[in-house]
Image (cartoon, rainbow, N blue to C red; front, side, top):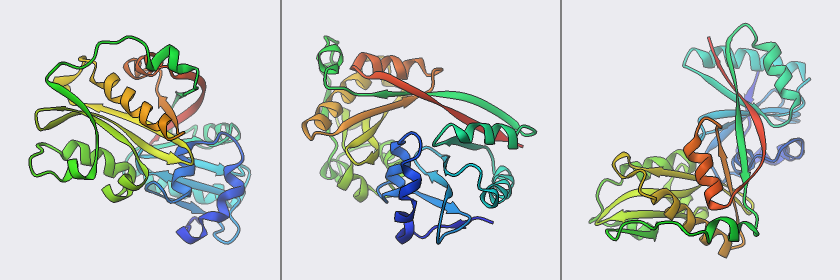
Length: 270
């Protein structure tokens, strides 16, 4: 059986976080910066855990992949979760891949790859300072502030708030830890680049542009401004996307990100 770990006990997971790839999404939830929760078979001495990252709508497996007690609890958890939809999960280290593929081979399972892009200082010359068309004169790129979000003059803020709340739980938490830049046309935000997760000095980036305003360079302009703000604070931007999302990885490479790795993502259905 799996038990939800109380937030006051998240520090017990520290040994698990050093094994495998240091996913910023995992660290951000474990550090109580971003929204999520964690279950384990032994709350007093966790050696394996399942972490839910609210912003991604997915799970991560941490720690010892041979822990029989945890694996039995995981099977029951997955079975119950599938009654409500898809179960998406990645392992923090490669040992979990074989476990997932073996234990859920009889389920409808799809394995895909996620690409990891990191920012390096030398990328400045290659990406962020590269010549690119700016937004139209009618569009202004500005930092997203609490005053801007609270302005009674702003229109259609629902898409901005829904993006941020999914990752941060509250706008207050985002303002305390995150950074965002947006493209505004008159008094309407039409594109935004924002910190999705904040783990130490690493910030994952998310970009969203409203459908009528796509293919106008707004994603590039807002991301460029967001990266410059992060670098001015000695923070490191991070990008993660599917190979199928060509628009996303092309934007990352145009901005100067470098692909540094990949990992398996599993989508399991009944």
